[in-house]
Image (cartoon, one colour):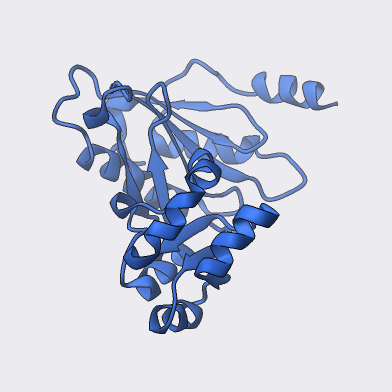
Length: 234
């Protein structure tokens, strides 16, 4: 049944066409035919070599329209910082007890982990567990900070992390299929602008190799990388 559905979706549009951003978003929304509110994903292939430390592209970006997802935030903090995290809406808060819970119980019921600098010695023990899942707090992504309240509010409100994978791809959710087109477009532009800002000085040649927008359960729609800031009026 799934294969039949996918074949129908693939036949419903031109897979090779290079679309303007608003066209790609419109098509991706039409391709979201699953029985739930699918996420709209942005996949970008960058002209970088992630094997070189100075060409790993990573950071965070605030999505103006949010993600449409309930983001579960865990905070490694104690004392006043723990109180601040709780008041900001963190879902899980702890120090040594949270480290032990993850180690002994395999607890991983969260999407983002934030830590105060003084607890990173303890959190570092979880590298093999959190690292492969992209959950390890890192100063470069704003998830190791003394201002945990602000970090919690930002990630709850639509700040997302991004990082190149082994071959230079970056994948970021830019909304839900139920979002209106302009909301998704505003998130798309925010991510593209952030990736442009984060371009390594050592990266040579074409930086944006390919850009695709797709629903969770659907195929991808190609975006014309030469016209990513084109308006609907063009």
